Each structure stands twice: as C-alpha cells, then as structure tokens.
Length: 106
Image (cartoon, rainbow, N blue to C red; front, side, top):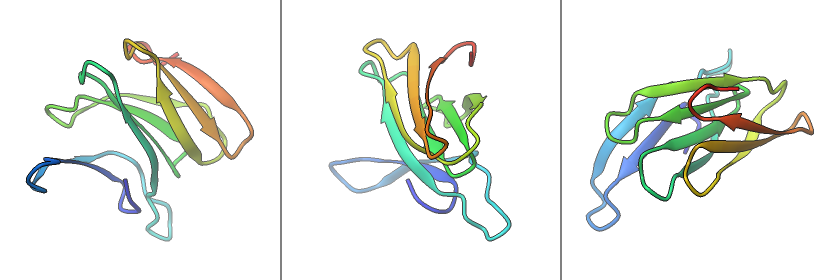
C-alpha cells in the first residue's frame, strides 16, 4: 500500500514484484493513498481501502478490480474480511464502520 494509488503483490521469499494493481483514484495533489489491504484466507479475494473514500475488491491473480464500493464520505483507513472472504468491513475518518458483500458491493 502506498501513496501512488496502487496495491502491489510481492513474492515474500525472493522480494520480486509479481503484480501491480491500479484503481484507487488520486486527488488534485496526486495523493492516491492506499491505507489498508487484506487478503482472504483462501487467497481468492483481496480488498483495499483508500484516501479516495472507496473499498475495492481485487482478483489477486490478474489484478483486475472486481468491485468498487462507495459510501464513505472520508478516507477509508481499515478493511477486514470475514473468514470466507464474502464480507468486507471498512472503517473511515467519517466515523462509520460499514459491512459490504464482496460480490454485490452492498
């Protein structure tokens, strides 16, 4: 996670970059902070939350955005997935915690 709006997948053993996932939007100052990233226990869903007030679910193999969840009115600072990766919880500077269905975005 970083300020360039990307999520990067690395090989933990070799340090080799495997995939760069682009999708979080940058503001007028070029800030596209990705503040939190979590992957499901089965490795099939990756979710991120960012300064663009969104939660995104990704295909961790292809890097494609599966779903963009909008509803927060300020930065998303934390995301967490339930055990099977079907639900994502997000916490934001707007003072809310939201629960999302990863498949429908609701």
